[in-house]
Length: 257
Image (cartoon, rainbow, N blue to C red):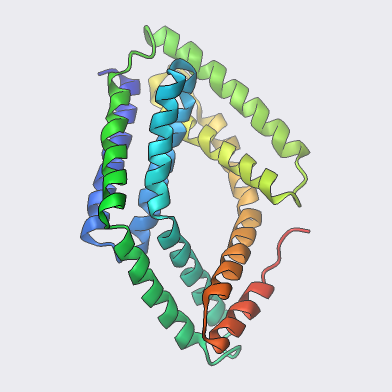
């Protein structure tokens, strides 16, 4: 197995290991986050080599990994909401007497979503995605190190150029566009980070530039995400006091105008 295949092998093992850890302790919000990130990283690396893959095969693996990540989506959203509201409560302790009810609601809802990730269909989706991802290790994607280096540098240069242009020209009030640019920045960062040792050239500058863009747009996207999550959750809550508190927290979020 060459270095580029080793990168994929290590990432697949990382996803598999974190999934086992999650099964042992699904109460950990850190494990939910780390597992989703590891799947996202694997998808990013897969995306980087898509030009050398059969289109249908790439789509199959990418869709399977995407479906595996979505299993944990509602659970991660609750963890994000809990953390955001927890910080808000610390900074606004006199705002409401409904904080206890709010966090109790989160805890109950989280247990429901946590149990849902263990049903047969979701377990099969995750396990199948991990197993099929191993097919990447059998692909003969590049003839030799020189071929791989040429492909890597050319693809990173193109992605970086496109990313920089999008960053300079985007309207930051266009949340969807900002969100897409941030996702593109993550893909560049993943590739530059994990494939750095597979080529005889330092890819650190690509990683640093992508990380800077990702970080700068992070606050904007986080504000919109939290606003949307709070809005959606408010519509589900029956307790009027909890609903009013959620609206108060939501309306205090400042999104880019």
